[in-house]
Length: 317
Image (cartoon, rainbow, N blue to C red; front, side, top):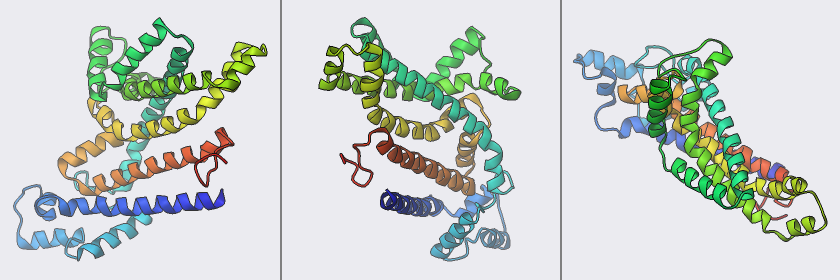
């Protein structure tokens, strides 16, 4: 386990290193001069352009710029936002709680809704199963921005059950109430995917021989489902669920922009539009970090869920 964990941490560091290089290179790969992007088309004297290039270290060789930026990032300095005229770290930190609450809310909806729906479909063949298959098929095919438009039109405009985009609440209860529609829009597609995976895993376990043996011995059905079927299906459910939850980090920018939620995702969209590269670089790098950490956590949970799985090989021990 220690060797496996060390290898995964080294792999994580390599992924972050490569990602940081690609993210930093984006400003140089984009068409045009980075200084012109920073000036946003405003005319400037050669002296002013030289001062801006020196301020953002653009007058140095590319590799030196990257190493300087990487060293600053390792010390928690992501640079200074061109658009907001403040340090990137505190700027992201001020918007991180809203995004974290939205992602946490959506993650609960994905896990609870997806798993319960998948279990229900597997245990109720026939009409219920077909209805779940149709519903989850529609859900997985619906992009988050389409869900956002439909939810706002129905529940905010026509029914008036929830507030529309741009509104905020006070306190935890008020915040959750105002984030309900964004969380549902964020969770619909991923909950449908997780429900289908749960259904398939449950059906596979229901056909296993040890389940039939347990039933033939008179073990109560609830015990069979809980101890033998659901426990055996947890492996693929957790694996796909972890990857699915990591996808929330990417989808949140779409939903926050649609509902005008003040968060890191909305900040990323604004920064891309304004060509605020320090913010784009920082948010992208932090998103990749969150993604790989979630995948690492899922891999480490595998042997705890199924002791037959060896962490060193990823197969049966």
